[in-house]
Length: 241
Image 1 (cartoon, rainbow, N blue to C red):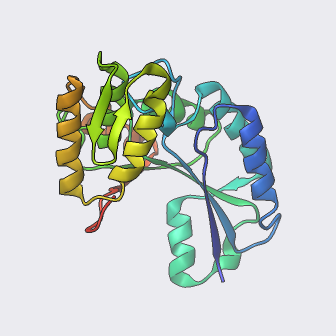
Image 2 (tube, one colour; image 1 turned 135 degrees about the vertical axis):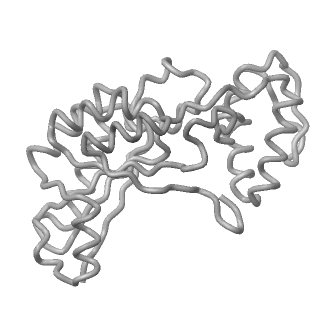
């Protein structure tokens, strides 16, 4: 039976965290066949470069990501999503190489083309980019977590914000915690409810959403021609996010 280990490398802006990821990868099968490790990234960027975006989605800085890919390229064997699907469909799991790794990215932020893809190309690493297909070339369509983060960080208010969780502080030391509490709550809501609440909160905060930072279709076509595998991605379900 094929086992897939999916590890989200979230907030890996320090090399020590990647060392922990490597330790995890080594401890879940070593050189076993029929085991695929899936590394899921969101963004590769410097936290200060796009301060209107939620920095918690930064999986690694460009420097750290380069270190990660260099290490993986020396010690693991990369396969494509197509290779993985073929193994699943045919049951020929033993045809997969030992120490197999799949690299994927979610959300198609600008920094994938700017930072991640040049590094992946340099090491010859195949990658699948999952694109939220309603967002390219639609600048007014923004991710709710970015709108919420931007609103809380940019507001000039320093009093309490009235929320479904009760009053939450907007004082500078408390803003990160306020954002975290609201983000966790909003994840429990249905899509329409969440969008309405985000709109109301941004209006109360007095901060308008910025345009999205998602790659357009021309850029995505260019990436596809260069070898990036594209897939459709959504975080919305019928019940929530």
